[in-house]
Length: 496
Length: 99
Image (cartoon, rainbow over all chains, first blue to last red; front, top):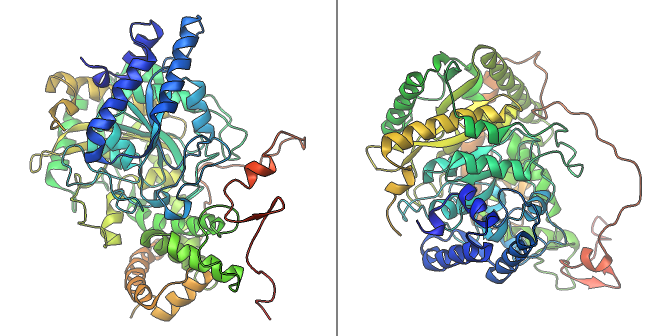
């Protein structure tokens, strides 16, 4: 088996035992990027020289006998919304084209400390606003299963990179589903940790009460290893939870659901869902029962209001956060001809530097927060948020985890929903409740839809700080399906 | 009846410091009207006595000791600035616009 097809855990072991060098492993992935990324467009920036330098350092330290973590020498693709002091950081926006942050995000710093080799920065919907990467100012990424389709979003470059074997691991951020939805539609694993479990320091802010960094991988154990590597309390993030990282790696190795109580969320299925998605989901429910889980139906009556509440709360926070792009201290400045005022330059710069979706959300948020509308929109949405958390709380009294399809449909064609915001927003229907309530949720592959042969994701939701439960159930499903399919789902993907 | 008019969108664009052209205003007015109409559904939930949540996980303010720590140098802080003069951000005229 070639190096690019190995798991991150295996690569880490090979590097640690010096059966393969980090340089060899890194070069194999750089070669793969050179071979396929002209078709996939997962990366906005690749730095081969820096990656090989980092790999050499890891090899030298191992040769000296340094004890490094389980992912030392393993390459990773890093979402271009995390600050990196040695690479540009654009958030997929023209307003930050070429910007080089003067510091590293906490997640970036922890990747480096764990000896992970950052290959480059991946494409995303501008400021993580979108479900397809079509809102990137640098053009869309493509789904490795069908290059005419979206790889999900906003972390679509990261999902596409891992699904096309350009990297065994990648980072993402999940505000309304931006890790789980891209993982589902590309047939890989994507995890949204508990809010506050991974640091937002140096993550370019979209909606601060929702933004959560998390891992992508081709299997459940690799995702757990990556989450463990970059998670944990950070004093630079005031909403970081000061508690130990849940035992995610142990749970991923355990992968056992016997006796576990699993709830199927009644409100996340049925009308509007693609038949092939529902068929794979129901098959997975049967599988879990056959593995010894007790599966029951659970009702979460206010989940139907999660999407409208989210599209008030997230734009409101975005309109405030993105006020920092004022053309004064960093980024683009347009129209400064010596006669225009700062305010005019600001308005011209923001009009030129932001794409349509970002403008829509800034204005929607400004509307929802304006006096006279605040109570009816933002205030009411915050109350709905409380009710959604209460629905979760009640459900987790009855069951250990909740499950649903991750997305209502498989990957849609590029262009299909590009200028229809409401249709695009529906992609996050099942993922949004967990962002509003802050609990942990993962997407793992559960097969291919019959009508189009494209991947379907199973979402597993666990309580706040119950991240290990997501991995435990995810690993059990992965093992059973891998046995049934005779290999991982990605082995069925077309050769690029 | 539309939930949001073109004039309102022009006002929102001004508040948001977005210099939009006429075509964009028309386009966004139609889309924002549709979106606002859809998200207004939050009002259907009877939630009069429900406390609002600003965050999912309850938090209190976090303080740290007020100690001097290493920070960015002026060169680092100014490294991304569109215009710099004498170790400062050089910005367009900010006074006199309210006059």
